[in-house]
Length: 172
Image (cartoon, rainbow, N blue to C red; front, side):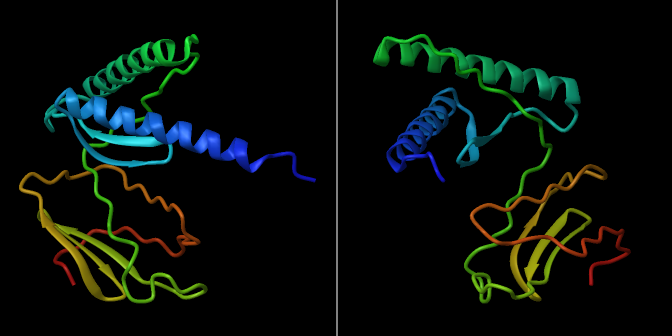
C-alpha cells in the first residue's frame, strides 16, 4: 500500500524547483556562471585557476553554499514567516566539467539496445562519440594530466558496463 499523495509530491517538486531557480539566479547575480542544474544540484564555475589547491576549491564551495543558505533562509522568513532549517551542502569540486550529449542521437531512446560511447582525451583534444559518430569535440589548451572520471545518468534507463580507461599513444 502506498501512503503518498500526488499533491504532496507535486508540492515538494515545485518547492524544490523554486529554490533551484532562486539559486541559479542568485549565483548569476553574483557574477558566477552556472554550468548545469538538475533536480537537486547546481554546477557553478568557480573562476579559480588550475593552480588553485583542492583546499581553495573546498573553501570557495563551502562559502558559496553557506551564503546561499543564508539568502534562502532570509527569503523563507520574509515570504512564509517561518524559520528555515534548510542548510545547503557543497559536495565536491571538479577541475573540469563536461556533459556529453547522451540524448537525442539515433538509437539513444531505444530500450534494451547497446550504445557504444567513447570519450577520447589526447593532447588537449576531447572527442565524444556515440556509436562511432562524433557528437562533441572541443580543445582544452591546458588539459589536466590526471584526475577522476565521473559517470552519471538521469531520467534514463542507461547503465554502464565494460568501462575501460587507458592511455593512448595517439587517438584511434
